[in-house]
Image (tube, rainbow, N blue to C red; front, side, top):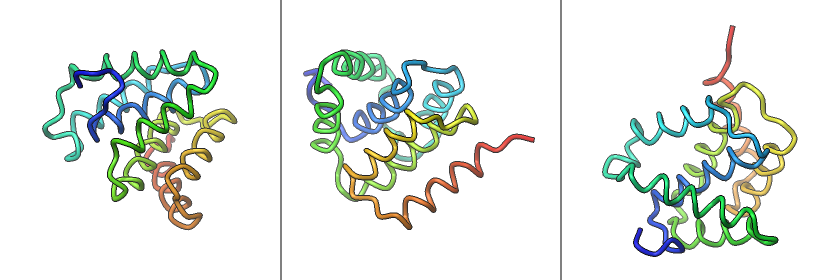
Length: 139
């Protein structure tokens, strides 16, 4: 990522995960661990340079401070992400939101916005959300 406003598809996925984590203005350790775990283990990130995470995160944080920052973030992500990865993006976002065991109102709203922005239908969204909930259950 040479230009902070240019994202690779993997950068776009990282940006979305960071956005979800930062949406409630409280980035939790469990969420950061989930993001790190996914980057280290999922095939979509097999050739991803983890040194990009800091730069992508800074871009997200800078944009979130702006008035229409969320719209700008979605524009960057959608511009970099092939449409076939929309469900993958939503699944990663749901896993980050569920990582701490609580999907609060703010995180729920950002997930709703992601569903809208990425045209995720209700049935698909429900299945992805249920999978995230199941993966992050505690005793």
